[in-house]
Length: 295
Length: 338
Image (cartoon, rainbow over all chains, first blue to last red; front, top):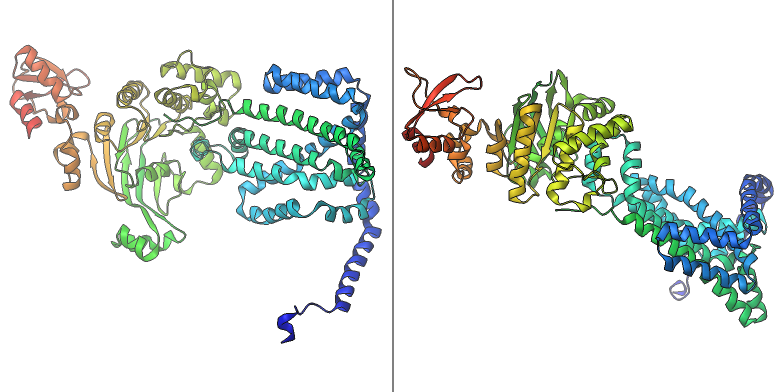
């Protein structure tokens, strides 16, 4: 009855062997293909550095003006414009301008990457229940797996730096983009789709003229979520060498610098609010005429 | 060519994964309930045979669940048939390839929907031009053609409005403009007016009848409303449980209902308005007598003319303004009260 009280686990030697085999084969893989993979991601590295340099090199009043213009374009509300500008000015006044630009550039690259990967994946998912049943569990894993766990292989493969940080952030921030694209397309009114069919639309015409435009508000909500989740990863990403607002926070944790921590934390909150308000009010404005009206 | 007819022959639709296997059983007399209970398949249409004459309005009438919406969707194959054929202009619609079907839908049919099916993110003009856009007509030309039809359906000045800024009746005018702008021979109207208020519905019926006088399209109109069917239909087919119970002119259905089911419908009909004098006129014996009336006027109109002219006999005039027959007051009164 021993097995009843104590779980008959795998014996320790074979477990050790298993771990060793997996570790060793992955290490072998890293040695064999690490360089190839690194060069595969090198365009991403170049892009990241270019965006970061551009943002840092741009004089601060220009950045404030651009953000204000974006806010106005998206929301047509002076309140939103004033709020966004004020947040940036505070950040600058407290000496966090450069770190903020670095963080914004990383968030920007991560968001662009998430859209490039997420939009087509979401479209494929919406068209086939087969694809959906494969992708959905993957997304569940991406969202629930603690990020430190997938940081290990990423760092083993690519070392420490911006690119592994971006990959970690994208893994975490991608799922809402995919899910909401899928959901948005699936929610498109069937009557409108039938009309598109009846007039002889090809499936590309249907996607471009009906499904994507009608799903756009939902897709915008996905982009908004992706940005928010990417910001939430800033501190974790800084642990593997991503520069920006995360690093002072990390330093503050290690040394118990309360003020440093809270200021940088507030700066992250500040840019989160800027991104959120701009993307949300844009989504809302898109929605103005979109609901299908009856009667 | 614009008046080519649509021939539907032995059309069956059985919903379910193995529909084809049960066509024979249904043809041999298995009922809708039996099919559903024993095999879990739903009978949509059973042995439909109908000629939809070109250049006329054919109304398919039935209550919900009768299969009328299923039937109209076979004509542009939004629903694939289980067996049977639909011949139009020498081609079987049921055998068209994807590409042929797409071209057929683009060029030769246009459809108006009960729930309008407008694109909510596009304004009236862009919606009306949608069919032409799908066909690949250049922007300038398609907007000009669309604008012409917007004006024809009475929406002048609403080009830049969005569908949710319009009332139901106006949205359906957009739907009609979109369909007419396509300039297709076949116009499919799926309960197009069922979602509208009664007054607006009558209004839209008038719009359709007036346009049809000039356009002479092959119109298939679905409705659950017998009054609407009688008013619009050059030909009427009544559908019940996926089968055609009776087809013919309005007068045939009102005066000679095929069975109790149709009779129960027809009982409530205002016969004075549904029956046209042309359909009941007696052959001319002797010369013309009394005032004249056009054959497509209703019995009620004829009685009004008789009353105001205090005549008890009218001469019925055919389309070329030649006398084709005669009606008497007693005969007309008989039609109304019997």
